[in-house]
Length: 133
Length: 133
DNA sequence: GTGTATAAGTCTCATTTAGAGACTGTATAT
DNA sequence: ATATACAGTCTCTAAATGAGACTTATACAC
Image 1 (cartoon, rainbow over the protein chains, first blue to last red):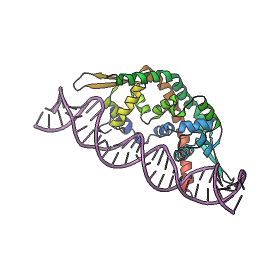
Image 2 (spheres, rainbow over the protein chains, first blue to last red):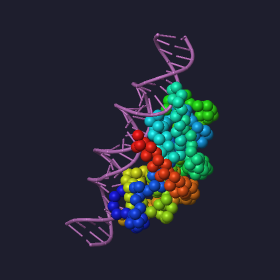
Image 3 (spheres, helix red, strand yellow):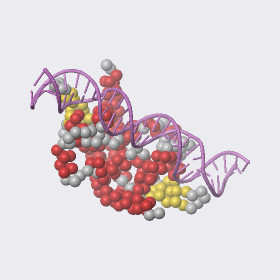
């Protein structure tokens, strides 16, 4: 959105902070990406090869699987190892940092599981109110 | 990705589980959406009106701000109140459930802050390895 | 030996989603 | 008179995603 920014943001910017390039945010953006959490959860159970991961996440496209794994590898959460078999196989596994990410991830999913009923109720109420003119 | 699913997923499906329609996943998808966390953090500091939120999140478009707020409202994390001023003003604030979401959210961002240096290092190493033929 | 499948991707094309910004309509401030 | 603010909506364009064909070499079934 355009227009003047508010005081707090203005102050942070004056302080050299660039919202567009905030490292925490670029990290969160990756983690928040649609497939990241699913991949990490799957790798939490052990190393997996590319196609095996694809089979576990049936509705991800090869394209996005490749792309997500590359980002995870680049961020240091996932390790990629190529084995010289015929045909060559590639194994993905969590790094130590990747494993350290499981704790916050589980905090999130625990909250989701606990809140699930409330959320579904809220959605039903919202949709009902919208329908009832 | 097409192809046969693995045993675990197959077992869950046999058990009536539909990955496409997993409630936890639809919740996580919303929470993971690019703007959700920023909006929730901003509302954590107090209620805000539509344009004020836009000013705090300078690079969100009105379109996405509206859409994100609607989802958050529908999920019951955010309350929307219209005041009959001229022109009418609309105030957004966190519900109790919205506030309960701050804890897991902070767990995530804390992890991001703590891991930030490692991640940036990993990225630099990855990019360097790619560049060095 | 011919056909089929697997490995881990890449590439292209079609669809979906997001972003930029004009536009609405009333009312107060300049 | 003119500009600005309120909270959006609407349209048009740009970017991200999904579906699926294609690659190259090998192993297995028939």
